[in-house]
Amino acid sequence: MQTPQATTASPRPDESPSLVVRWPGPDNTGVPAGTRLRKSGSLRITKNGTVIDGLEVTGYITVEADNVTIRNTRVRGTEGWWGILQREGRTGMVVEDTEIFGNGKQRTQFGILNQGKDIQIRRVDVHTISNGILTQQGVVEDSYVHDPKYYSGDHTDMIMSTGPPAEGTELVIRHNTVVNTLDQTGAIALFQDFGVVKNVTVEGNFLAGGGWSLYGGAGVKGKSSNIKVIDNVFSRKVWPKGGSAGPVSYWDHDGKGNLWRGNIWEDGGTVSPG
Image (cartoon, rainbow, N blue to C red; front, side):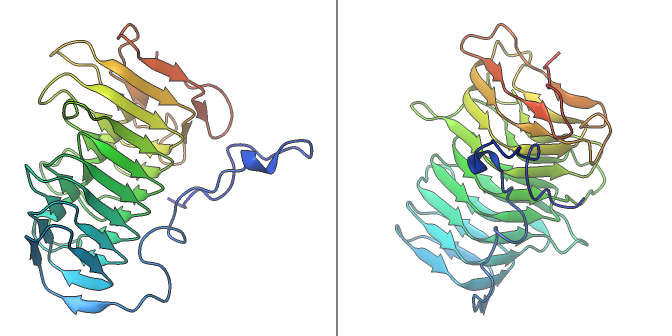
């Protein structure tokens, strides 16, 4: 699918230029053009505050420390569970201006997998993986998560959460281009695998593909709450219905604090959660 480049609708002469949206894509995510990279094998980070800058890693990066920053780095995944992992009990990882992808022959299960607490993800390009980004809390913004690779038995999601955020935290998914070129599972998926989903903001994203482009957090474990889905643009460029089945499913209309507002189709019209 060609990356969306311009606007949700062409601005009229009397409209403010601020209404023009420049979506994340290959030219404004990942490693900045001209960056010189040093080759590296897989890394295990155990020192708090480590900064990884300007590497080309073949394998994976496992973070077992707090406040680690990974920037201007390319991770070429080989067979394994992740490209970048923050371990349980760790917090404060930042991943920015970085590209993570599989080799297309052996499964890389997750581009970025967060088992810990806070994480900040900015301007990343994640592709050719089974699942893009998995985290229950933190911020994912200005990123391009797209073009997964299917392996037998996969359930494929580009940005996903599988339960509630850690106490006192929230999950913000803001201004990303999220494209699942398969007919399953989602572009953004809020699931109740490990508990009732709450305190999530999905705002200003471009969404396309999957079975449903958005899974909204409902499930059998209880009523979701404080889920805000605001000003997102849904596209028909992968499937005529947005996802192969439709734009959105599993939305709790009556969940406390849940808000659905300003979500539209790229080609015009309002998207309703049904």
